Image (tube, rainbow, N blue to C red):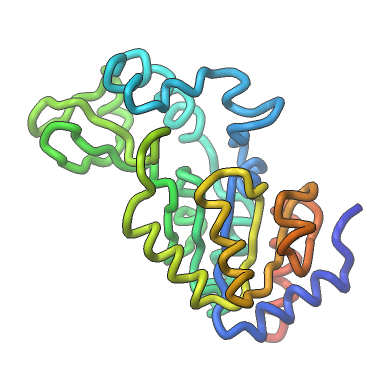
Length: 251
């Protein structure tokens, strides 16, 4: 069963009447760009061992960890392009109906689609940090030719700027995201099941502060029957595109 035209119009009205709206996105928004989710039967962790993203393993076995990291996050993810859902979020933001996007994804597709304010809750794969001198380096293909990649400044081990298991959420992203739970009165939740802690707490906190929750997902999530006000069931690209059209009509 998919979302009805009435539900899409309801969601559009909520966005149009919002004092401040924010999008909150997860792996499901990027699936149609060819990026599989991490969990589930066809997820990345069904094919690879998640220990490659454990900090202790990374420092003990940097070459082995980097071989898998490069394959997943650079060779494979690097081919991905934004899909209509990413473009819909960017159009809504650029027209003033979204204050930005909080994303759990590290793929940079929101920025590629034209979103201006993207809070990367789990960091990004687009830059690397030297574990010795702290230099921040763009993750270019030539830098990743030799594994593990070495810092061009000091020769130290480079680590991707996304959150590993056992690593804290970046402080600025954490602060900005939690601020939105108090500021935004409408949350557009797209492609996230609400299973990844602590990110999963954000829409719940927003709801507790009185926000309206619009959810876009192919199937019901942990949010659907607990905090969601309007459930747009269907593909992220189709639902976000339809929602953006309904909001921007006449604007």
